[in-house]
Amino acid sequence: MHKASVAELSAALKARKFSSEELVRAHLARIHAQDSELNSFITVTETEALAAASHADRLIAAGEAGPLTGIPLAHKDIFCTRGVRTSCGSKMLDNFVPPYNATVVEKIADAGMVVLGKTNMDEFAMGSSNENSYYGPVRNPWDTERVPGGSSGGSAAAVAARMTPLATCTDTGGSIRQPAALCGITGLKPTYGRVSRYGMVAFASSLDQGGVMGHSAEDTAYLLGAMAGFDPKDSTSVDRPVDDYVGGLNQSIEGLTIGLPRQHFGEGLDPEVGAVVEAAIRQYEKLGAKVKEIDLPNSPLSVPAYYVVAPAECSSNLSRFDGVRYGYRAKHPKDLSDLYTRSRGEAFGEEVQRRIMVGTYALSTGYYDAYYLKAQKIRRLISDDFRQAFAEVDVIMGPTSPTTAFTLGERIADPITMYLSDIYTIGVNLAGLTGMSIPAGFAKGLPVGLQIIGNYFEEARILSVAHRYQQVTDWHTQAPPDAGS
Ligand code: GLN
Image (tube, rainbow, N blue to C red; front, side, top):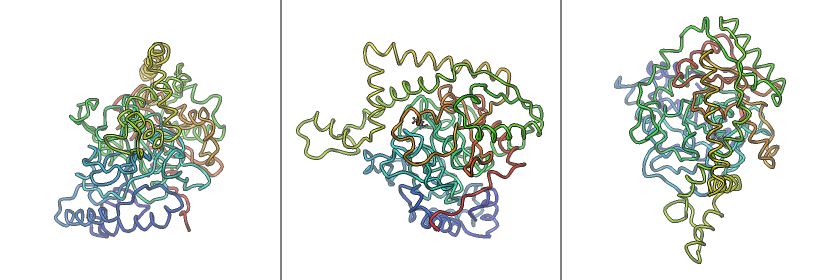
């Protein structure tokens, strides 16, 4: 069951080959067997899952099932779930049980899906390795001495280890695509505004976007279809119709023009990762696509600009955690100022505190023009680079991350090296575009991701481009050996 596609699972449920309850129990058993080693879940909602599964079974029996009814999934622990702790990977929210659902959670429940639990993540989605979680690091199922990537590392590891067929995730600078690459799965970050951010704990609001992880483009197309759409509760959500992502998968790629950014194939790229990506691009040429070298001249500035904009926004967003309204509160405060200072000092981890300090500095009088305003100008230049590129090409491809999964502890003391894990992904967030990562092969036994970047709202196009590749290759079907055995 755990190796079947979503379409196969859906057909089997409808044909009553097995029930949703059996399917959910099989996945819960895989979680119990593997997750004490992998640590990809913060909370497993077994009782709720079994209740939702039997509800789904009743809908199926009554002939009222949609394509996702009864299919299990995991939510990144950044999405608010009514009655279920939503920690965001932080001690600050370790005791937070939201009274409402995020729109994404609501929509997925409406589709009849069954939530297995909440996945581990870097604290407040800040990180590229999952080592910043209050709940301890997640291990990469392909090599448990290595990181799964971050910040959606729990979702990526859970999908890779076949503990769930699908998971939600978020991407502010690469947190869907980079862990998808490092864990050998398919992950898609939608265009900014395509998926509601209501009820998704905010990190950097102009960059954050919820998205999907699964085993294939086809599987993720189903989930994206259920999640996407306008939400009046999110003022940045865009009111335009949602494409038929599953129906659009078989678009031809004959004559498709693929842009290869010179800047994504240069210094810093592990040559073995580069070779895998080049082989994938040759495969596309065989399938009838044309390749064109392009320039994204400002892309080397994406990481520095991001590390001004994202901390600035996070310093503002995280000011709500004051020890008063909700979340962690320090014991026996002397006065109000002591309450604020100690609550925040005791409950935020080191990386979060570093970002708040950088962001507060960048926004302060006298420095705003020098840092924040300048970063915003660079952001515009980066968007313009993409706009020019998309005047000549249909999609952009390259490596998702410069290296394969690194070992636990390897980069934790060196934030700059850690930040460079996202050098090829961050520009997409700064511009607000859509991008995905698909498995394209292995380097020294570890998965390598191919990044496919699409123009605004071209999710259907990049999904079909990914699907075409997955029809002729089997990288996406390869699974790591079970953990804990
Ligand atoms: N790794 C980047 C950071 O630490 C991106 C995180 C994300 O996309 N949430 O900010």
